[in-house]
Length: 178
Image (cartoon, rainbow, N blue to C red; front, side, top):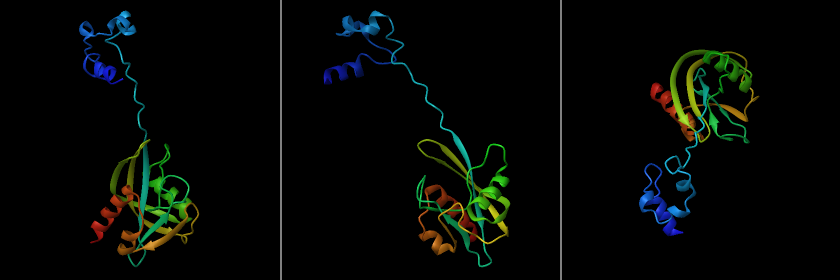
């Protein structure tokens, strides 16, 4: 086995096979069919899709930030995040913020300026997380599309378990507040 592996690594290379010195060429199907320069076949890599996500930074009168806990089953379940979610193909980022905040917390929020964008890659997709400064315009938070919610000050924010991308968003927020 090791000898065949060494032969493949040194003689039967994919870019420039040295068939003239190969001790196995009389048994080689690729050589007999004159295909040795076309093998191995390169597989096309499937492109990793990009998901546009939103996160809203909503402050209360005391300067605390509204955060939600993801439901346990699913991607990053049980971790905390800023309210928001995935942008639908036919909507703007601002509309996605308003829709996803309403779906998670049953409140209305108005999207203000985008305060940052975080790019993160998972194994099966890339994410572009757009972080918006938002203002709650109506309703009282209620855990509708999340496991829990709370108003969190800087110390509490740092103690909660957040995914890496949300931690980057938190650093943007805390950097701006300090």
